[in-house]
Image 1 (cartoon, rainbow, N blue to C red):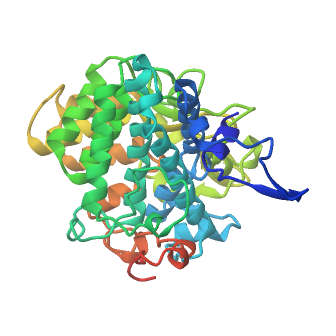
Image 2 (spheres, rainbow, N blue to C red):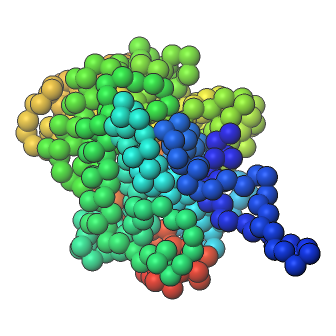
Length: 447
């Protein structure tokens, strides 16, 4: 049903002309539907919004690609990519070609998802008043989330040069329903894309309610992603306050053990937003690449001793791995049909701790209390004092293999191997297909 709706949105008029007895007949195929009819009712618009979630959960977006791209691109010899896919090997080695098929698919799926949300937002006048705020909020959340990761991967990091002149990605906020010169957009600046992200997520926060349905956007989900955005910008007061709203909202709670945070049977209290996967719908590419064959994966991403040595004795996170064929794998993605986590509560505690420490504030709790809350859950030795390096080390251990590696390296201005955080090799090139088609696009430096 969802796929049909999405196809209808972009189906143009198909007209067959048949001449008989000097009379021209206009015949439309039985599968045809007018664009105006496809989004003519409140129900149709809400079904289209469901299609946006379906697009968002693609393995080329938050069904895996966004997360593993962040980890492989930011890896500093803590994992080894041993697979045969050259597209992912380029990510890991930082040796991109402009024809990389995986990054092209991520780009295309991102803009497909954005276009669906644009169709929803352009049709809000058709939505029943009781549902209008929620529909707009969910669509804006999805669009803001996607643009945030697009600009982080395809543009220079916030603060790496001039945000007002550095090129981000094309900003498209109206439906694309045909192909004309007007549809070929140039790249907006990094500052402009971030401004759109903040506008969408802030609006989503104001429109969405406190009720939470697993797999759907909520006020807390908008606040959580806002916390990420503000942290990436170095706006620590705003990041702290957004994270604190999620924590004090009391909708979510840390699971009793670290392992429980990665089981669908136990982790609902902690997961703020995720991609739903079942044996009938959805796919988990984190399982595909991070899990060994004994857990239905390919076993392509193998954890190395350098990473394992980071954990303190007794820290349960340090033993949350499996061995297969003499290789080590994270145990976070062993369920083939496990939901794919986008953001969870533990990250909010760590954002609040880092921001409070940088600002010498104690909003919500002291940094020491927040860090020790995370460490206690993992049975790691508690700290008596806490420094910024302690918080950042805790963040690395807690969020390992969840997609934050490259983004943390860039915002903290840390090298990735021998590459400086600002190296052009850490920015994904615009797909050559897009450059060839859209002459308004400028390729990233170095490609």
